[in-house]
Image 1: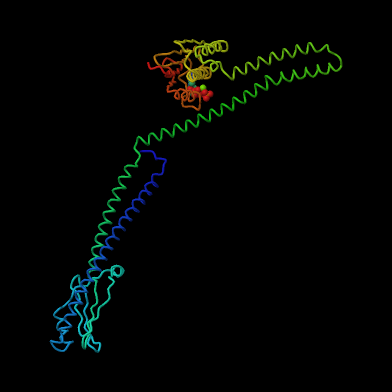
Image 2: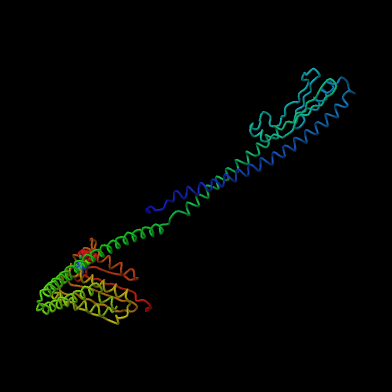
Length: 417
Ligand SMILES: Nc1ncnc2c1ncn2[C@@H]1O[C@H](COP(=O)(O)OP(=O)(O)OP(=O)(O)O)[C@@H](O)[C@H]1O
Ligand SMILES: [Mg+2]
């Protein structure tokens, strides 16, 4: 299973959903409005034309009707034979206001009407026309209800079709986006690796901070112990000389000065030693061979019971500060580990240039098989970090023939071999 991704893809998908839905809605509304507007003008024009023709035709009929007999009866006959006129209602009233004739309803889409709100939206701006004649009057009322129903059928069909199309489009787009946004397995693995790397970096930073604090405390202790006593002694002698001087006893001055000189010399040595410790020789002049030779000499003086074999190969004097320091510190930690964990009798330190790489091996004949590499130690982690920062690699494992072996390999800058 893929690990969960740490960024909120859900909310991104929701926002895309809303955006697509909004755009679709705007598109549908615009389309519907265009349709409604075009139908409205065509209804106005159609009903107006039909009304004008009807009024003209009935006007002519009214002028000729007296020739055929009593007006209302002749007109009723005429209108009955005429039947329904397109988009108009025709009513005939006698002089006393009695409805004598009403044109029949349209049989086209009989029994159906457009919804009231839609019909009101479409209604043409036309008034009824009244034609007066002797003993009667004809009312011609424009009737757009069929045209409105046609418009309603057409607009609602296109709207529903558009809605279905837009919905399908929306689904397809979201499906595509979901596929596009789904993190691949490689993405997820990269994220996990980056998260782990970050956690390790945090741990290394914490260790560095702790190391700095420890180092500060150690320097404070050294300064207090080495310098505090000497400076106090000098002050005491100086005070005593000053008192003796007041009493006129100048005899104590020479021994006092000699004592101060002696303490100052010791003080100088202490300062020198502290400075040397704070700035290891390897930083003063980045010559790995010289630094390792010093380390070997020191080892032989301090740890006479563990034999050190030192093998240096190739020119190690021009590796640059970063590489020299990384190699030196790694070797230092590996040797400290031999002292701490190995109970070894012999240790071999081999450092050399091989091709375009610097290789350093520290191996001992101690109790490597009991090594606890999954423990809470930070030495190997720090070494690995140092080496990785320079593009190198580190191996640390028990040896098959007994003991423990650490091997680091660092690429040499500018060496293309
Ligand atoms: N030369 C060695 N012989 C036997 N075991 C070793 C040797 N070097 C390292 N180890 C094992 O590897 C473990 C990890 O070493 P690492 O230097 O990371 O931690 P540490 O020395 O225990 O603690 P730290 O270095 O933080 O003071 C050690 O605890 C030890 O068990
Ligand atoms: Mg260690």
